[in-house]
Length: 169
Picture 1 (cartoon, rainbow, N blue to C red):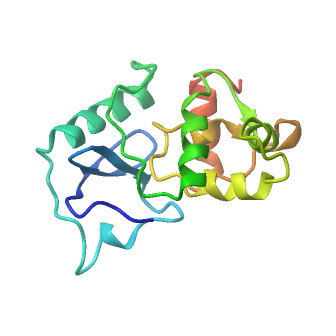
Picture 2 (cartoon, rainbow, N blue to C red; picture 1 turned 180 degrees about the horizontal axis):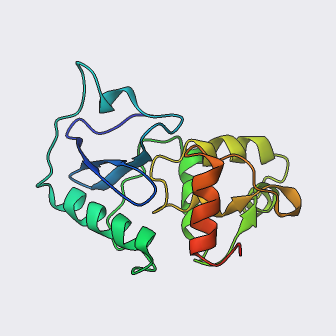
Picture 3 (cartoon, rainbow, N blue to C red; picture 1 turned 30 degrees about the horizontal axis):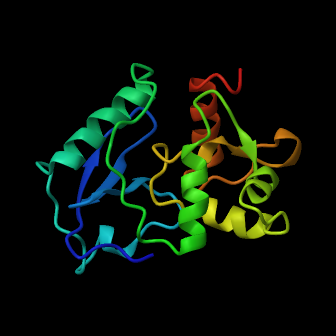
């Protein structure tokens, strides 16, 4: 993943654990749960993005993700910047944005929707690398037959998100 050079970050507590947020001038570039797979190296260490809790996109994202996870918000209203992914990844992430709250799809259905039914594994890899968890709803993608498979933030969080949205009882 390549992130814009003006990327800044902030952290916010949520009911599902701390969330790390990143934004640039174009919009939100990252939303990750602490400890999730595929965290960018720039969140910590000597080359970490600067912290900026006053950045307007980060402030809005922090508020909206907390409201969403508390059940008082049903959709996100944030500018997104998905430019850090490959064209294929970006196409997959755009397809994720079309999955409605309360809905779900499968990796195979996404591959067919993108015009490449043989690309199920590639779709799965792109879904797993989604840098904007929850707001770009990768948790709504299920395995064949509706199986709960893979989620970089962990299956307990995926289950909680799907229960919150009414996909799972």
